[in-house]
Amino acid sequence: MDGTRSPDADDPVVTDPDKYHVVLENDRVRVLEYRDDPGARTSPHRHPDSVMCTLSTFDRRLHFEGGTRDVHLETGHVGWLPAQVHAGENTGTSPTHVLFVELKDSTSTPSTSPDAAPA
Image (cartoon, rainbow, N blue to C red; front, side):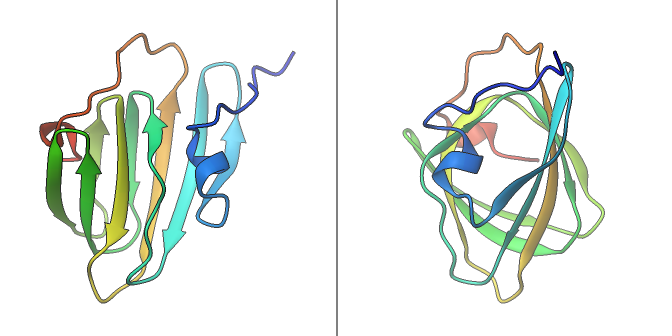
């Protein structure tokens, strides 16, 4: 067995297959590539505990059950992303390009708080 899993309905590769693509998966991690253009929006989806690596500078608005948070990240930012459920939109003038390294052994409960956004 290679450790891959069947995607859930709130998995970003299911909710937004035009933006999220699996680039590597094994029994420990799944690496997603995300790309969008200015004005693009995602459907609500779930991320487990992850490491996020930005490959472009971008501006986003993240929508959580508990509110919203605006985020500006520069190319080359690497940060911890705690488990969370959100939807997002590209509010900037440039495309978004990000890699997410999702941890499979995460036991964290997804946050619905705007404070859980990438830092």
